[in-house]
Length: 624
Image (cartoon, rainbow, N blue to C red):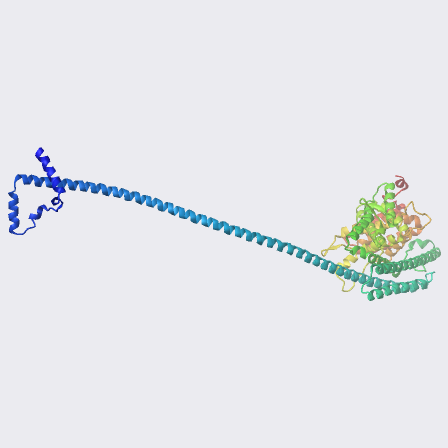
């Protein structure tokens, strides 16, 4: 409506006027008290309808204005809140960027600092490593110098120690040589008791012996003044001792030869007197067959002995002493710790023992090769052994060592090989006999080893002495004792039989290629002596019957041809006089050896012949 439009324009104009800017309170009439208020209210009520319209418009305007203001305020607030939110988010983002920039800066500064520190640390470590390397290098050089100095000191100390030890060893060796020299000198002086038997002057032997003793004494005095002896001094003393041994050996051979001649002469005189006595007795002579125990008058001793004759024991002891002296001679070689000396010793031992172990019932030509090899070794010639050339000249003590080991091996073959194979006695014996003939010292050592292992080959029955250990006595009897256990009787008799068979074969055989003009170095006369002395001694249970059978089976034929009637008389003596003695001491469980001996002897007496032993070397053997 036009009037209403003009009302709103009027209101706008009024509002823009000074009065319109005044604060208008609609309820100002309500603030009045009392009567004025009621009057005013009444007057207001009485206002016209146009006023009411104006009032309604005012109120409508105010309401619209308030609504617009409220909406505007709300929008403004929302806008402000959005701005604040945007500003807040922007500030937050800027704070984040700032924090990130700050953190980046800190990381960069930290990284730079760390790089500086690492660089400084690397430089420090490099410098430290360089110092360490220089220190190690200096320490290494110093250690090398110290080690060289210590090695030099140890080397000098070791050289000094070895020099002192060698000097002490040489000095002890010189004392041992002097002691042996004095013992040999005493033996030389003890030979005065045989002066009546010898045809040579003992003064020359004794004079030379005294000179040799003085020589060693002078060497020891000179060595004492110069602290320790030299190798040349020891070698000179050893040469003097060897000369003394040779001197005593030559004298011993002279004494043995003289004693043998005297014994042979006594036997011949005894046999002549025995024959004269038999001729006087007439036909009854066969009832008293001769025995070596008969005295000059031809009368047989009534009682048999247990102890061997003194001259036989003296001969036995001389052989044992010679064997011990031989061992002392090469003691330096056997006890040497030098590898070269040990090698030489082993080579010499193999060269001496292997050929002997190869002897068997092979062809004669092969046996000759073995003999020639042994003979060459003993003669100082080089021989091949184990693919190497071996000679006794490689060591001053080589010959003594080889002679001893060779003799030991011959006896061991009898103890083992012949004990198991009786026929092996003859090829082993013929080689031993030939070597004995060319090298007499080997023969003496064979006897010494044989007597020590088998005392019944002397013959010698060791006696038990007061205070002697039972095991020592059993060893003296020839038993093997190991861990206080004595070997079985069968094995003991088997070994004794092997050695007696070898001995019985040696005394009747000669090397067929030797000098036939020379006499056998240990011939059948020793077999006769052994048999005679056995019969002059009381028999031992089981042992005597076994050894008599072995001896007669191997050597009986040769003794029969050599002594003929005298030998048959001895067999009769065994049958009639010695058999009862053996039977009396033999238990029922040991009758086997006695019965075997008795049957063999009775068969021989019945046929008046002793058969050639099985395995005896005939002429056809040497042609093979």
